Length: 363
Ligand code: XIL
Image 1: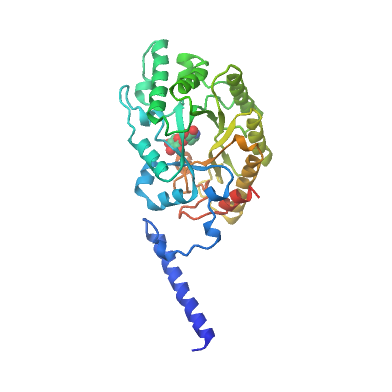
Image 2: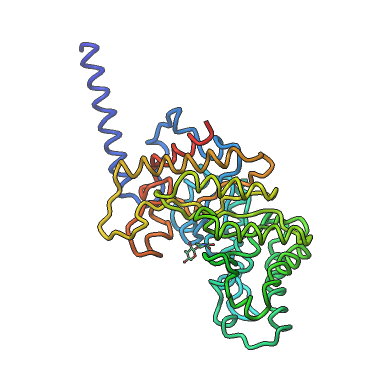
């Protein structure tokens, strides 16, 4: 047999093997057989190995338990995790005297087994409250006790296992006013500082964050958030960091995104990009499709955000966390009832151009 025939037979064989493995991968919902995948040099680059700060993802605990593709991708790419929902009030504390730790504990065991940091989200929010809280009829002192007991019981349970917490989430409205949440109605605005103090009392080693969205919208909300954290700092409230959720969109300007990051860093606090996703269909077009052009714009937007983040002082770079892992598990399509592709991995668990955009942000 001539060498060229051998080569073409061999490459034909290789081609059919790879086509076979691609078609298997497409229909198999469980893990990909590692024997059929020959990693190339580029595939060995991962977010956690390439990036100079922790790279995290918010995790859905039921997917983590049931879906090996999901689980394996997280182990491969990330060194920090946040519970997407499992540490929220309604999940952990469904009735006054009942705490349900099992999903959050599962996430922590997973993180420990794989050498990952756990960021806690969130001790206080106006959403995700159980009915017993929304309907609670109590005096101011009883509300204060409810706030404190929840915070200290949760922090106490996870002490030594959760290194950092979003203590208060989304306390500011888009118009820059303090949100008229149930907490403000019952306890007044100063409850925010007390929430940090209660958290600090229960675990003095935990890093405590104020987390919100919309720093990139413009000066109104951004200034209000910065004023809040600066006033907490100046009162001696134990706050260590500021979380920029960064649920943003491909049409947001690079200038607004960079300003969001640099002004947060100017507080001197640690900065966590805590929930990033970049919507490609922010106007809710029903029949929208994922195109190469949109994929490239998204890659450029991820790059711009990472580049701005990589320019703040190292000691303030707490990390970047994406809000869930792939386009199949993002909250955006179901929450806004539209097609969208906001994350760096596609619904088949493959890297999108956005993934390369993140890597390019540190070049
Ligand atoms: C979202 C989750 O992703 C959804 O699964 C849930 O139904 C609602 O909450 N800001 C936050 C997150 O701080 O907790 C929210 O997470 C997204 C917006």
